Image: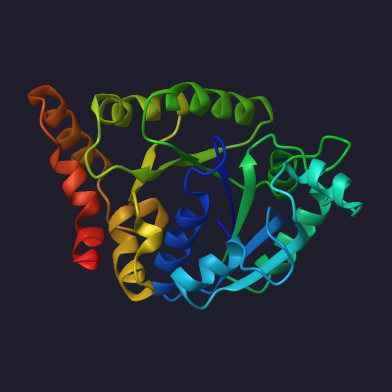
Length: 261
């Protein structure tokens, strides 16, 4: 798995923090890691973007940003309004492929969801994944509504002959509600792929050293970590049946809480 596409079911759901957690876990295992952000929107020249956040949290990764557009819009729209050339799927694939010859793992972090347009011809992150024959890690929110958008993302992947490596919850709440707890059991079914992690809410605010020490505890073995989906889900559902805050929430947030004290 030299190239892994990190896509979300939408925007502002924790893709960058998940990308940083996967990168930090790989770095801790001694791997050389690169992170590619095809199009950064909503950030001006000289301002820190998503790749800068990954470096801050994860440490020594190689980062590449193909284009930057100042308005917080879909990449194709932002490029058009900026009067700038768009990023095209073949450019993403070519850059990721080159990085893969020089690194053990290349993480390609998308913008928004899987089918957000990068250019006026409708090129998407899914097109880049197909050119690369790369698996897709789906980052999803925890709560009500996530089953529908996750199912739609999975259906789009299958329709294009793409493989979903699994699902990571991008921001697991300290006190999950009933929907979030039950979604742990339902997400693998609607995604047709395993649950591979739950990053606690607020993880991106941790001090970098604490983030790096904690990242592997949030991710399953398929991503290099030690997180146990079965145990986490069982604990959460036990809490749901009893009507109390789940032990799973405590497990996921333990490292965050210790860092914030």
